[in-house]
Each structure stands twice: as C-alpha cells, then as structure tokens.
Length: 288
Image (cartoon, rainbow, N blue to C red; front, side, top):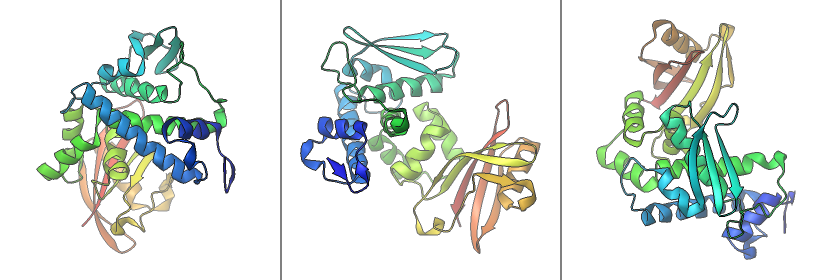
C-alpha cells in the first residue's frame, strides 16, 4: 500500500479503497488521484441524471439529499463560507447568508464534494481515515472538481461551446457565467484545464500600488502556450507588458483589448476590471 515516494496519504488510501477497489493500490499517487477524479466525475454525472438535470442552470441542492445532506440553511457565519455538520440521519449544511448567489451555489456544490470523503453508510456519517491538515488540499481540490462538475457538467459545457462555437474571450465568460449562474473562478479551470475546451490562458490578478499579484491562473497545454509564464508577482519596475495592461484597465475601469508579444509570439489580451474592495482584474490571453 505504498507508492514509490513513500506511504500514500491516508485520505488517498481510503478513497481508493472506497471508489476504485484495493487492487489498484500499487499505482502511483498521481495516477490514483487522476483515477479518483474520473470516478467522482462519473458519480456526479449519474446523480445529475437521477435528478433529471440536463440543461443549465444546474441546482446543487437537488443533489444534496443523494449525499445525505438533509437540511440546507443560510446562517450568519463569521469565517467559513459553509459548514458541513454530520448528525444522526445525515448532514446539516450551513451556508453564509451574506454571500453573492453564485458563491452560495458554489459553496453548496463544494460541500457536496466533501461528502465523498465521509462514510455515509454509517449513522452519523464519519471519516474512516485519520484526517491530516497537511493533506487538506487533496480533499479540497477534489471537492472543487466535484463542485465544478455539478454546476458546469462536462457534457453540458462541451455541447454549449462546440455547438455554438464559443471562443475564449471576456464576452464569452460573461455569457457562460450568466447561463450557468457561476463565477469566472468556476468557468476558468473548467474550460482551460478540466475539459481543454479553450486553448488559452486565463488568470485573475489583484492590483496593488506597486505590483500585481496573480491569485489564480489556468494555462492551456496547447503548443502556443508552452512558453507562456505568468509570474505570481509582477513588479512595477519589471516593465512587464502584462502589468502595464492591467494597470491601464484599473485606471480606466473598462474592458480593454490589445495585442501583446511574449517571447516573439503574438497574443490577444483582454482585461476586465472586477469591482472588489481592492482592484481585481480577469485576463484572457489567446494566441493570434
């Protein structure tokens, strides 16, 4: 029950036994996570079918009872966006009441993802592995994957993008956000790295006085983007074209579209200012 890098995380060991079977324990950690991801996506798609959800918007609350979430309430939570509470009969899900509707939908779907790491055959549901905070991101990322599939199922977004010929752009993000009732943060990884439907680079950055901090980024594996590097921090004195473009967007407070050259290649770059307490910009970079 160990891979070449040492003992498997307890969470991966448990989830592998629960969803894949003990016969695959000799696989590497990376392969196991990939197979778990595929299996969880398949389970979600089956649940969507069972709840007769075929077209957007997809409602996570309809899937919740299938995962023994019997009660969903909005509450004035101070720190957490949502709390999944095991109890006799299943779970109670509390969602922070003062969030944007898109955030509430994602939090509900995300917590449904966490139920896959409980033994829901027991009453109350429990974790059958030793929970390690150091392994927190394994469960967290897989729960994000589940949430994205609930809200933007692959079968739906693939048909939507391919049938209607929707290319990567800020306008397309806005359109799909409205159709699926989700944020750009859900669409970005779904389109670029989950499904490979968009051959592009999309990132979100926070603009400070003297630098830009890239908070989230998804880079296509397409040949046109192999040399594209989006640093985590873009300093003002680095003369980076990306910084100049983002800064102009914040000052003018509107959508901006321009051409940039990175390592001798031409790209189209769109930037959109999002209204937060601190200026946050979404950028879409596509090869010309």
